Amino acid sequence: MKRRILRWTGRRFAVLIVTVVAGCETYRPAPLAPAKSDQEYRTRTLADPGLRQFAESNLDSGLREWPPPDWDLHLLTLVAFYYHPDLDVARARVGVTEARIKTAGERPNPTLALFPQYTTNSPAGISPWTLGFSLDLPLETAGKRGYRVKQAQALTAAARLDLAATAWSVRSRVRDALLDHLLAARELDLLRTEEAARTDAATLMERRLAVGEVSRPDVDAARIELATTKLAIRAAQGSVTETLARLATALGVPLSALDGAKLDWPKLDEPPAPPEMLQEAGLLNRIDIRRALLEYTAAETALQLEVAKQYPDLHLGPGYFWDQGDRRYSLGFSVKLPVLNQNQGPIAQAKARRKLSGAQFLALQAQAIGETEQTLARYRAALAEFAEADKLVALLQEQKTAMQHAVQIGESDKLALAGLFVRTAVASRARLGALHKAQVAFGALEDAVQRPLIEGK
Image (cartoon, rainbow, N blue to C red; front, side):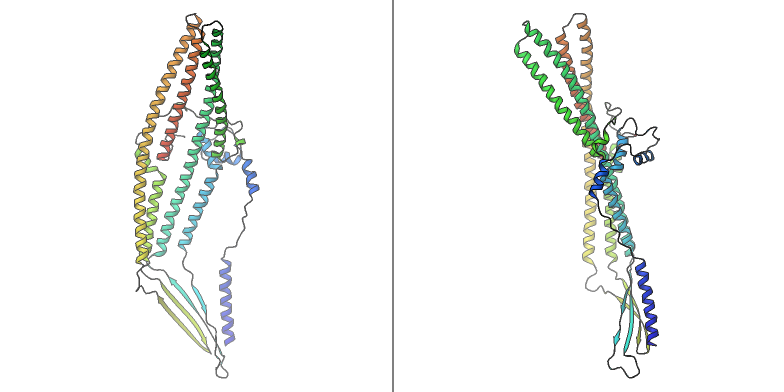
């Protein structure tokens, strides 16, 4: 009898072990290969077929050719979304929080206990062995598992918004780098135009110095201004190279990937008018505000979970004993008695965290309102400055055209015209600076509401 029972118990225990082991995950190593990843990064290009498929799947209309002839902000943003490693990190964080949902939904495992015993004074003919086992089956009460799942779901949704915030940050860096590079290239062109104008002016002044029409200090001042312009050209050349490298970094590609790429920004010289209903758009769309709401939901659920923990879980303990030929069955029941504490400490902490989360949301909301108002005021001021600079350049262009005509008919001299060319070039650079300030302010306005304010951008 004892052997049959031992065989029966052994078979059941073996089946249990096999079932548990079959459901276990196996470890799969995933070593990093820095040399390989370095090589993969350095070989990234804008002609990548995977990039084309990604771009076409995110564009309203297909691309006629690949790579496209012009790369605007929208296309470059898609490049960054495809390549930039910050998004891979954010996606991995979403995966971590999604795994928390699975963890939160798991039910507690039962516990198996075996009780083999040996009796030293067992009667003759009776086996001295006593064999028994029992199970501890925990039963959660008060909906604790549901609260854990709800909290994990809220935190996962917040992590997905972190991914959206990372994507917006990547887009914002691409916009800033593209703007800086295009305007740096324009400034270099304007400086070269100014250099040519100052060269003409200095040459004319030297000729007049030879006949005594101007003084040596005037000529020296013209030469110093020319040398200063040449120095500014050197600095601008470095800025063009540096901003292109910064754009490549923002895209997540090597600098070589931008070789031959034609960068474009339609209507760069036409900053848009401030959009209407900006405050409402910002408060409804800002990613950090939506994330703060989800965090408050998670804090609320955490409090519900701690309140539910006041109610103890149940533990059922069925058992079987074979005692020297006698079979005995038992059904145990246990519960933790909440007599010394009713989980009041964790409940108080959860209440405090919920209050903190609510205060943080209100503070963030006020900050968002303030940022939107400040950036809107800054953008309006920058638009006004750009409008004045634009009027000045237009006026100088008209004067230059009129003076060119006057020179042709002999009513003005070439030195005065050269001076007007210089003033026009200087004013054009000032206009470019005002344009840069306006576009930067508009980008800050988009960052304040965390969404593009121009369709297709």
